Length: 71
Image (cartoon, rainbow, N blue to C red; front, top):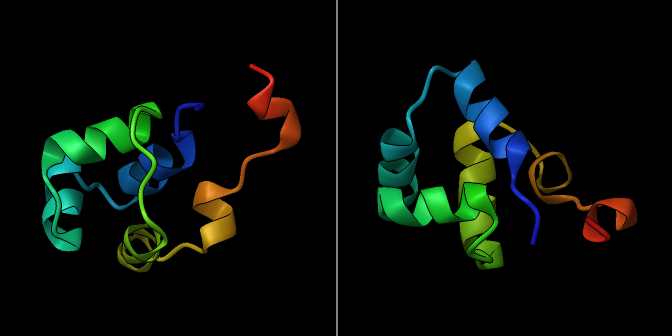
């Protein structure tokens, strides 16, 4: 699983820490870190919550190109 750079970028654009985003969606900062690092595959419900807080679509934050999967 590749790192989720779009979440980190969207979070930075809002000047939001991992801790604050995690609190907003009801998970621990460690879980949010694992999502960003590509070490944890969130449920669709959690993905939607993250998108809602960051004001992004599922495609913007979670779409994976086939070429990215080869890395």
